[in-house]
Length: 74
Figure (cartoon, one colour):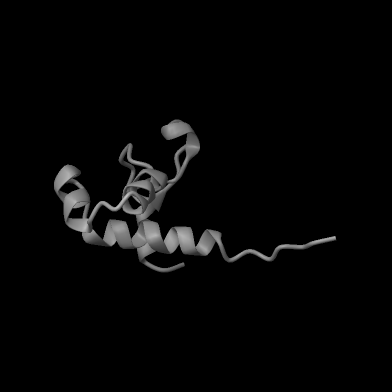
């Protein structure tokens, strides 16, 4: 596991057990949606002052790793 991915946490009682950033109540999905809507890294870091640039990198790496699955077709 990369050191960036260690920033992604999953806790059963937090955000419905969805992946969050460093135990905060900000889901990986939230950051990815902001990026998809065109928010810049600077805007995200300004709006969420507890975030660090490596947190955004971790979200992107996490998303990329989720897409690396074998798909079996009948």
